[in-house]
Image (cartoon, rainbow, N blue to C red):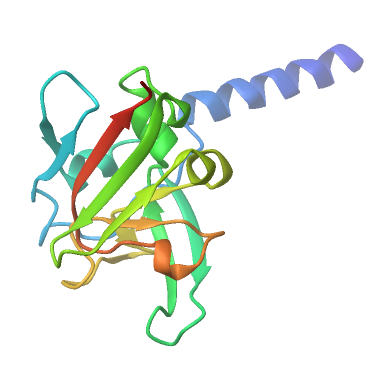
Length: 163
């Protein structure tokens, strides 16, 4: 009996690994899914990614409520920063700062403390809905941080490596 229980637990674990445990992106990203997001400092040359490419990664779903009515509540769906970086054999600790730049000129710089302390979501959808025109093509969300650290309309991410 004990062997059977262990076998069933092992089988369940293997199935969950095979299926994946991320949150699939169900929103229609067609309005902005191919819009390029510039990535600097992560590879030898600058390159771009799209919301469609990010949505294909293992995604997480997190909700966060801002302190002001303007910030509202966001239900971000997308890969974590860590998931994105793993593709390039990097982690948040490899950088002294990461700069997120938005189409409207808003910029946030996250230093080592923020990179180590917070889970950062690269949201390509708002729950089951696509991002609005005022959020797309990417929204950076830090559920545990003040909404002033969130960035909407992200068009560039710059990675500044440790010296």
